Amino acid sequence: MKVPSRHDYRSGHYTELLRSGEQYFARCEEVIENAKHFIHFQTYIVDDDETGNRIVNALIRASERGVRVYFLLDAFGGGSFTKEMIARVEESGILFRKFSPGLITKGFQLSLRLHHKVVLVDGEIAVIGGMNVANRYHGIPGIKEWLDFAILLKGPECVHVLFILKGLWNKAFISRKERARETIHHPAFYEDNVRVKVLQNNWYRNKIEILKSYRSALKHAKDRMIIFASYFLPGRNERKLLRNASRRGVNIKIVLASESDARVFKRATNFLYDFILRNNIQIYEYLPSNLHAKVATVDGNWSTIGSYNMNHLSDYGSVEMNVDILNSFFAEKFEELLQGIIDNDCRQIKIEDYGRRKSWVSSALNWFSYQMIRFMMRMMFILASKKPKTPVT
Image 1 (cartoon, rainbow, N blue to C red):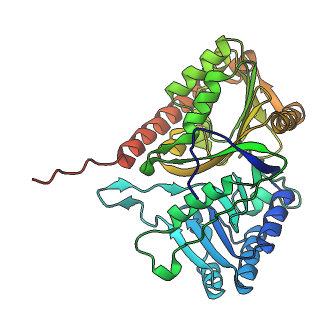
Image 2 (cartoon, rainbow, N blue to C red):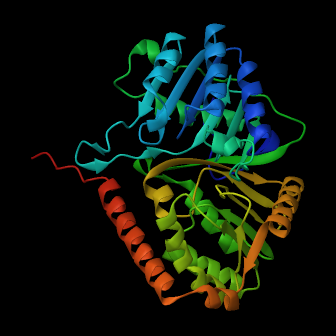
Image 3 (spheres, rainbow, N blue to C red):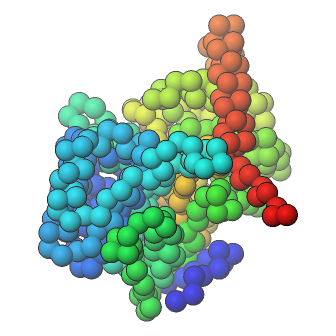
């Protein structure tokens, strides 16, 4: 079947919003348990803890009952996936390998990181989101789960998801027996008829679809926009689009982490607070736990959910996947949920509050962190850029 154009949304889908915690992992486990033919499981982190072993055990059970399982784990993020866990999955018959084990490829190019989090079963159902497989995304007694979202998708766009995942799995050096060859000739269409588009960022394959989608959303927003962003460091063009949207009357709410696992990155984000607040954009900080979500809604009509962070690491250094949903019923319900989180679990940072809590020491640290992160992003862009081939003479 021909891969659909990325310019148009496709109709005929069933969608289900999932939130981090037991709901997400129970649904993933159920999807894996119902697999009949094949599973593609690609993610950034799988920890050797209760949650990691729960999903790994589900994959092992699937393999043992004859399902062909492809397990692709990022080599850098998957450092906590132990040798004992690797032995267990390989002994069960799962086809396992790590993505880009070398940080530098030939020609001294920086390797991309596999940052998306996707489960695809039988080419019919996909779970796409921002959660890694670890206790911190599930929650444990006394400690609330990190906030994040995913979407369960059924319908014709699963064909495109399969195309992307096969492209990442089928490297030239793997044997013919390990290659993924599954195809879906007659995808199912659902009466819900939700219009969606699956997008990817993969700089090496000239794909920056998610970045373009966010830019388009900012350009065309008319009334309101909510952004939940875990590692928020938009580039100059995105900051300009945010400012322009606010100036034309769009009510923009950006929800950020109060405390982050990446403290230097958090300080770099804090450096942008002054710019954001001066442009009449509202900032909220999520309080109950770490915020790991990367989602947005616009005008009660458009939503996006996935692994993409608004920064240049996601633009040029990572393989990302998002689902854009063009459906007013879904967007209104999702917006209502996000607004409830803002009302109940967040504090608003107003410009006068920000001025009071800002000291010269914190301002200096924020400036230094921003400059350091920006320098690292520039270096990453240079190293990740494709080198021109030497002409044959």
